[in-house]
Image 1 (cartoon, helix red, strand yellow):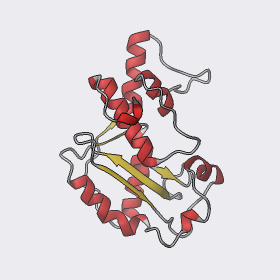
Image 2 (spheres, rainbow, N blue to C red; image 1 turned 180 degrees about the vertical axis):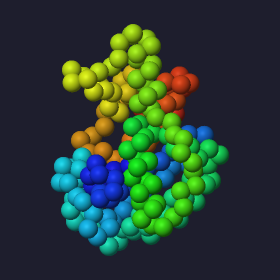
Image 3 (tube, rainbow, N blue to C red; image 1 turned 90 degrees about the horizontal axis):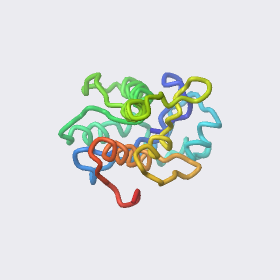
Image 4 (cartoon, rainbow, N blue to C red; image 1 turned 90 degrees about the vertical axis):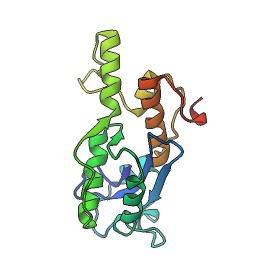
Length: 185
């Protein structure tokens, strides 16, 4: 998920990518036009690789206009527990966009966080918490991919589907020692 800011209430979702962990060939990707008045930080657009013109493109649906498509995609999955890297951030945005679209959140409150899985693995193996000097986690998604043995590096701009695939690949390698996608060989 890419967004216009870190503020899930005032910001807007720019794009959403997902991989069905039980059937990795099933993916979802959609870019959205932001809702009027959404908080937009220029640095967030740079990270996400969007221009100010792209986020208001009338050819793109708003999340509210495309919500049913995403709901149907999730409902086809055998497991509807949302998983991701730093998944709480994604969930806060997704739940807020669903609320704004007047759509019911029907997937419960449980989630699986890749950051927590990788943090615990490093801590258990090294007996040290993977922290930066300021006491914050040293495990970005790129950091977690290194823990999982993946040398792939993302481009300068994030892409929601590419990040979802990388997250799924990390889950698979960390939990099952199994490769999922050829692009991460």
